[in-house]
Image 1 (tube, helix red, strand yellow):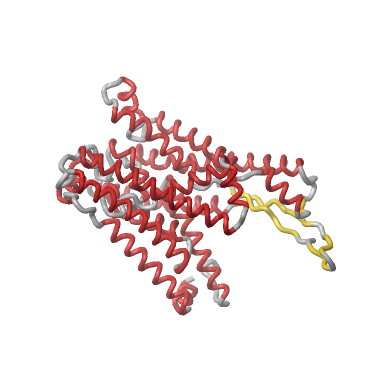
Image 2 (cartoon, rainbow, N blue to C red):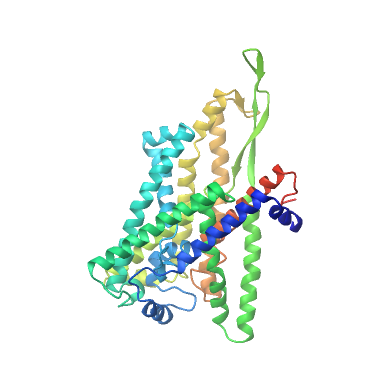
Length: 438
């Protein structure tokens, strides 16, 4: 592996792509710590020190902790890249869901490259709109003192400075989107995912050190190394599950096209155990923050008191069970709208393909739906258990929901890492070098 790594830097164009990607990531991290104009950095830091717990989260911060996770902590610093890549992720998910509902988008998806380019353009416009709305919401919270329950974060709360802050954060999101596309086109690829990877990885050292600082003396170090050991084991399990797939064999019959014989090949349909990726965790986590948001605006009601007792900390059994059930539901929901057995069976029949032992047409559709349902069950249970790791850590280690080895963060870290290694591996193989995985 070390030899292959050296070969990657000996290849001029690949070395150029790696250094270009690293340069973009440095700019990205710089924008994540650069404060937005009109922010009282000293007052904000005092509030973060006094209001936040040692691991970096409060009960009130729960409603936007997911965005703070994907921004690498930049949100609670009101940095230029405070929104991070989250508006783009949200826009991509919305467009993907609307593709199933709106016939025009479904037709564009089937047009190939031109249709995909048009959907990408719509995603950019929606990202801009979402970034403007989110920036307005967070600057308004900072202006009213609701952000971290901290007043006087802004030097001037008049209209013009506030508008400048909103436009700066919105422009930062657009710049982040452009940086991700640059990495995809001129870097090692997978640009947006690498930006998310960078932001989440940036929070790992502080989260681990915060867990160590909860206990003094030797116990702190024991807990620290225990968390790392458990995290590595969980990471190995995630890699194993993410690489696992059910391969359904498909044979194509021979047919005459003019004077040539086409077909006769054998291939397979790869169906992963985790077919939905990290999307169900994002959906479920976002939905779990709605009751907390309601409790903030109606703090005096009995229902708000019940929410504060059961949904804020993340370690209550009611919270765990609700989150687990929601993840299973969204896992089935997302798989149902992204993988259409009828469409796959129709395409196979159109090109002369069939599954050995299964008739083409409706029997193939039924077979694929049955296999998909059986694979989704362990996949949804796996995602649910993975998402509960931070909650279990809250009980065992008195950590918080920013526990690094669990939930969406670990799944993204492992998935993006594997994809990036595979891309560099493929580029090395094109030049007859041994790859990372050999």
